Length: 167
Image (cartoon, rainbow, N blue to C red; front, side, top):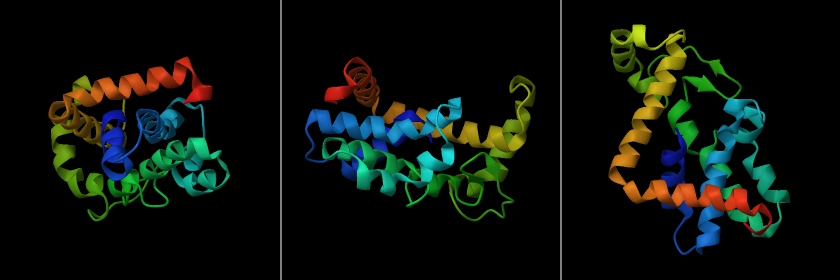
């Protein structure tokens, strides 16, 4: 999933009763694992080692670690329910049989849509296109249904960048 969908899922699961600072940590933690897409961190680490991180992180960053856990593959966070049976952390696409997460279940329908627009997709393999377009659809739906979320995510990221030590 993409930024807004991860933030919304984390807030729905663990955001009740938190201060704004704690909510910000939860939001930023829920989106940080995808920095792996830019080669900044290892995807397998950020998507499967959240519990280990939680054990050692300073208590003031607990909600950041919880956000990472809710994002990941192991234990079963949002990406597990999205990617299972289709994609594995580290960039490996699995042989899929239509079972597993939402991408594997909707693969054939997404494939037919992507093939209609293949000329405008550039040089991208079909599995990557299915993965990216499915997740972009979820983020679009999340943004449409929860327009205030965009501002909250922006402010959480901005706050983290402006003063990470007090997040």
